[in-house]
Length: 535
Image (cartoon, rainbow, N blue to C red; front, side, top):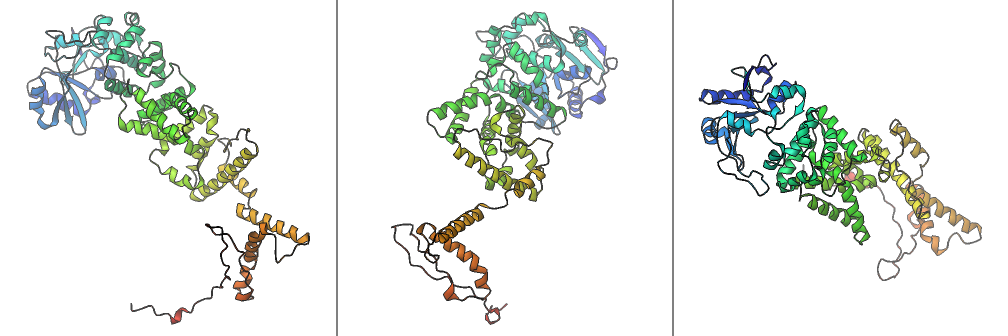
């Protein structure tokens, strides 16, 4: 063991959080030894900002509880720990451990119980990696190094304390920890470890609880180094153990989502790890949807059932909680509604809780060239940046384009529908919508009335009576006459007797004709004679 000066290594108590200083000071004043250990010390030496700090002490969990009182909560069965709260921060405090008196392991050698207290020298031996075995005491300004861990940090090498095969048997999750550290710190893995990283070793992950594997996957997705980590998982056979139904390869969709996730974390933005699960499971989900549709299930029911089936199979490996499962399914099920939205539903779609996640998912699909998106990713991107008037114009323009496509699809059943919104990112959405509106100013109802009027005029020119038109255009002609004479009648140039009579129409039931009544003219009422009652 060597004792190093913290100031010489560049460690300063000002770099520590107030919560960890409070915990160490309280334990020291109570007469116990307390140190910072693990990744916090390693990251400080590398010039990184530690995510959190862990403390270790010679006090047992019950003694830690007596020192901090209500601020302490004891957790864990396999490894008993104390969670100490200081303000809004939580510090995990462990007790020095010694090798167990009798082996509490499974048939494969995995440790199931390890709550034997010991000294700091015995606790050092239990650490898994050399780079995580430094003990830092900020009040004394000392760093205890038992295995020349400083040299491994300077050499940027991940090395085991002890035999790699034995350490993997004790805890198979260490395979995932090695890959995480290699991706995060960009360290080299020791050749002795690489020699035992085989598929048979990765299969030991199947013995680990799915809940613990889900926690490890959360650390992978939210660390900010996902794009470097995924190829390592494929290379060292860890991918099939966590994602059994997902092909072990980096598709364009997964690569783009990993890059975007890392960039959001680097810029300080929040992420939801469940979103990346939606990306990973998208291909098995679509395959399951296709199978259910081919079996005769309606499309809506196929999408719902496919989400349940795919997530149920994934939960055998990583126990996705209920709230994350609902997030993933809603993100998937909103995709067809965003690709083919109904005009009247567009304003309400933007207010849905999962709209932003579904839009990001759709936009990623468009960026990798998914033909099913049909340009709607860019349309929704522009829609969110428009004013209220521009949004109304955009909805009208989109509705007209959808109607044109439906008519084209009806006339050409085998033709592929064109993109709904195929403008480039640099184009002006407002100019595009204005041009579309100027080329199609006539509404559908006005166009229908014009066609019927032209038919009636053609029949008149052929010699038929204008007062008794053909039955096929009787109702339409009368409607047009009423529309043309409504202004003249209301101005007083015509009385009630000359108002056109509505053509007889069929009743909804029975097929009998209803009696026709003349249309009454509305007269203004003299409100001065109306008694409004006492105020």
